[in-house]
Image 1: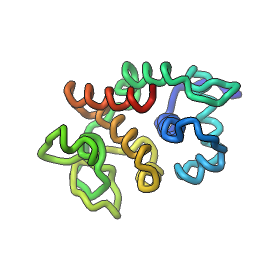
Image 2: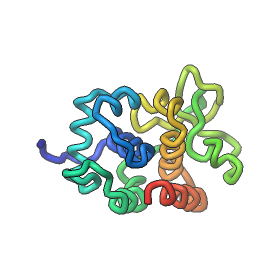
Image 3: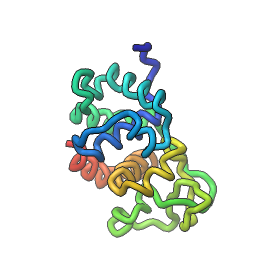
Image 4: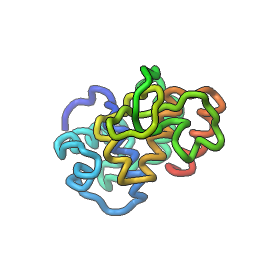
Length: 170
């Protein structure tokens, strides 16, 4: 196992996919194909997560309380984001369909994508494969959009997203 040189954004994407799987059995190649991340990157990511105490080494299950603690108190410091230019993309953060009814905003936030149908301020996804992966997994989509609220939202929005993340993770 390599040294731990800090968490990377794709580590969070992989952990959120494991949350979305809800204790269903999985293999490295399954994660690789659905997240558009190579098998070697999946392996290295899970090793980093084990060293960080977010995944149990023996069972390869998420330590949900530890993950939630990291998300609540450290995520926005480790993976900050400043919304960018207006682009076409896929709705994220408070523009996600789940949040759009409770959080009103003038300009939507989007992950840039040439196939996107919404025009809004660009939020860089945690990994380039996210834009394709969320089209196949609604739970993963909602989890990653919730995390984007932590990256760019205001206090009220962040509290709404944290409540949703807690209900999904814990």
